Image 1 (tube, rainbow, N blue to C red):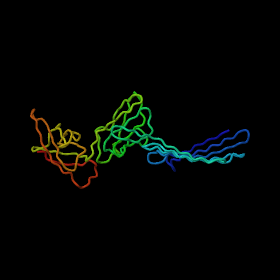
Image 2: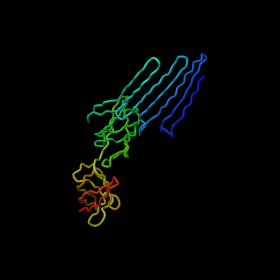
Image 3: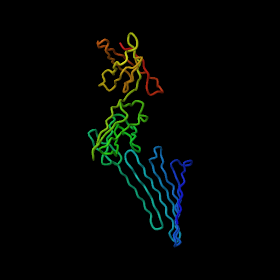
Image 4: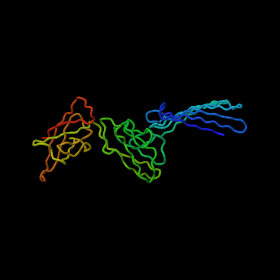
Length: 277
């Protein structure tokens, strides 16, 4: 005969539960066990379990503790068990080290097909494809498991980005072959995020004009919207914006010098007005 009960401890211990079980047989042997288990830390990536058991007729007591941590760079386990005749300690770890054309990246244990995320300069950005996946200090990460010959979406959590970091696309889709390593390459903009309001000599600049940071390779560029507004990221503290448009099939251009204010702004997107001449 056996009896089991499991009680969630949401009010006392989030993501934790306690269980009790007892078993009896026809020979008079009875065993009981109480367990406490669950997940801890902000991302619920530390799994724990504590057990205490007892049996009559010479079975004695037994106990055990186990921890399993799953982080961005691998997994580690630690455990201890004890009964009447022995004590045992066990531990283990798993992960991966991947060498690629851009350097070396540490990550979780990989499957047959996996991806390397490349977002240069975007450090410690969370990836929404697994437990505690995030970019390293250079902006690289490993997505350890992909489904071969299928579309796999890899998304960055833009809410975890620093105020001076931006990307053109939040997500990408990759289709790996069997045993393939694919790269998800993100165009990053490291610098200030600025909403410019640009005015020409005769009023706001025309809708649809192209704006680009002077001396930039084209990464910091955008299209002028209503009222001469344009959003650009990866912007230095001072510089110039070049704006180009066509007026009756005649190419027009102007340059707006800017100096970002030193006073801190609560909004991560700074607002600046400038005259384009």
